[in-house]
Length: 212
Image (cartoon, rainbow, N blue to C red; front, side, top):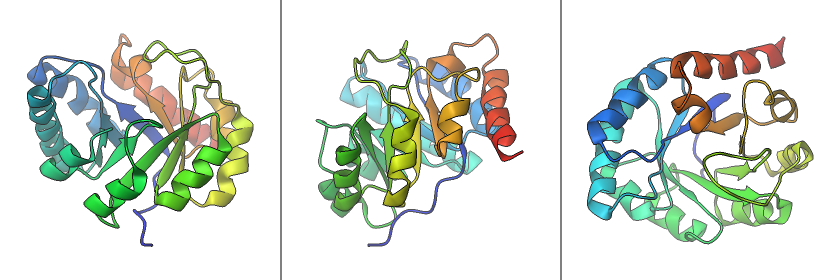
C-alpha cells in the first residue's frame, strides 16, 4: 500500500475549541508561519455547520502556508474540504474505511493511547501514523491512560511516524523525543501561552537539541 509522505520532525498543532472562526484563524496563522509541521482541526463543541465552515477556512489557510490539515474523527468532512487526512480515535471510526474514502496518499492517524497492540492493528489497517499518550496529565483532555516513552521505542519497527501527546511541555518533552517521537502534539501549552509563537519555538528548540 502506498502511504503518505514521511512526517517531518516537530510540532503537530491541534486547534482549541473556538466558536469564532475569524478568531480561530487569527490564532492559528502565526503558528503556521512560525514552523508548525501539521495542523489538526478538532472542535468537539461545534455543530456540523460550524465544523464545515471552520475546517474549510483552515484548509485555505494551511494551503497558503504549505501545512497539511488533518481533521479529527471525520473522514467525510476531510474529503469534502480536500484536507490532507483524518485522525481517528479508538471508538471514532474505521481506519480501513477512511483509507478507502480518502485514498492512498491521505495522512491517516490513529490514537493508540498506551497500547502497542492497538498500534500494530492500526498500521495493519492502513494508518500512516500512530499517536501515543497521555504521557502527562493534560488540560485539554481527561484520560486515565498513561503512556511510557518505551512505547515509542517498541513501535519503531512498525515503520510509521510516531506522535506523542498529552501534557507535554518544553520542560518535559525531551524523553519522548529521545525515545523516537517524530511529532509532539500540543493544544493548550501553545494556544493558551502568553506568547504562543515563543512557546512553539521552545518545542522546536527541543527537537534541534536532540540532534546535537
